[in-house]
Image 1: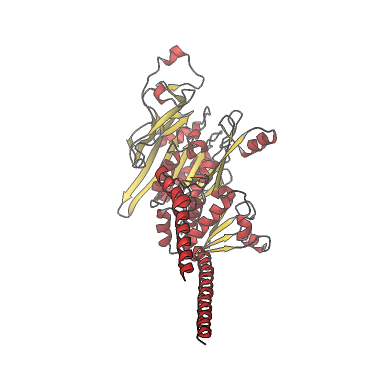
Image 2 (image 1 turned 90 degrees about the vertical axis):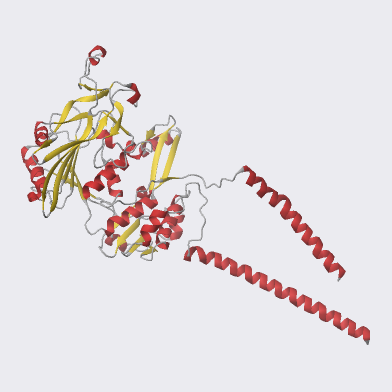
Length: 518
């Protein structure tokens, strides 16, 4: 009887122990499932991801985050494809980075909504939105303001800055890269992530009730070819557009009057002189019925006779010399020729944050000041050469003749300001002249060692009265890495290779001995 009771108790203990083990197993499995569910939900609901990339590709800057928290306008993001297709559209991490950046914008502001709409399944979307002169395409990103009704379409070129280089390190075009690859030649590609910059710029642009309008003139053969290559102002236009300016073109031959809503007029390298009628149009626009507030930017070409433009500039106290700035001091020559030289930023209203800014230019015509003050017009220097510069005639001189030229500092850019001040406020119009179109070369605008882009954006912001806005630089794509000091690497390796296995072994032996004693 006693033996039966003992056996019964033993069985009950085994059942109890087994039930406890089963319950514990169920609890552990349930906990693991719950933990995985939470891990899946959290990234979508909260920003709990950790960015371990060297350039913080999957993060946004603190300044951007603060701006988004103070956003008071409703913004809608529409990605013109399903999220699955968007992420699968590239073999690299480019689209993942763009997608994550858009999500971070939405997570940092309750005013931003993000949706994915497959353009193929919803073709009506193309009827509502257009991408400039081009039709809406898959993988575009639409940024729309509910308040103003304006929108901006971002294509791949807007959020990915792709540059191609040949085997010798020289930059080549996408067409050249394709041709090189066809013939088996080595091509290198450098991709920068401009997603944060592009989206932020688009938001600032679409919510602005009174956007600044900039018109690039045409009709006088502006920005055409030089030698065997072409040079245009698309990079300069893109820079201004990315900084929330509305960019357009204006044919001066086809308009009777320049629209008073245009704030800036930019004449970029015209190859033909303006006629008197065109000069009168610009004069009336700058006067703006006595209200001023306009800015005319003139960028000349080399070796072009423009007597009408010269006369117009002279009235504003500016003169474009026919010769080229030649730097005799080799310390300031930046290339293989003396016309390629470093420049310095002059002390002006636009140079406060660019005292040590680095500028570079070539084929620069000197911009002389005819007077400092005349009635209500004042002139000042914006950019200048270093000491040792001479005026080189376009046809050139011999070495002995160069030594006879007067050396000194020559102006590479200048401005003239016409002002009227009264009790109602200050009214000013400006004419700005830059001595070379190549100051706006896209290679210089994007070069990290120079400050061309920062300076020009700062100049336009001050001229237009815009408040200082966030400026962001594209991030270079690099393989995701986590740099760990050698000492820490040894500790981590030792923990996983020695301490953790030994700990598991000791725990296993202890559990086995404990169960054996029972």
